[in-house]
Image (tube, rainbow, N blue to C red; front, side):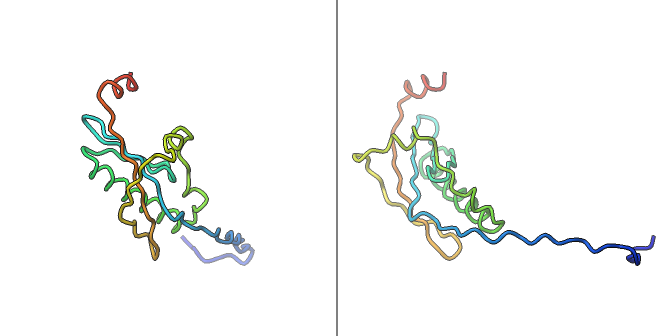
Length: 133
């Protein structure tokens, strides 16, 4: 099999790549954590990412890793327009001026830091069961 180019072959046209889209991380990511009797659900509202764990520490640890991977993947492969994907309005509406947020350790992303603020609520068994039905 001869792989040499023929004299009538046309060169492959190269399409110029799109210019990089500037991207800036928000200063802080807001996490909403709901403790249920049998599991904890953590939701990164700025990215609309969710993690589930046996307890609050596990759910937050998983969510922090997901946020880090999601952002770094988007930056590396120039999907920056898809990195920030806000949670539905009802998730944000649960935060009020009376909501207490706990500042957590920042997430190291490339050469920067993303601060975290967490809202934690306890969800009793009856409320969880009625929503699951």
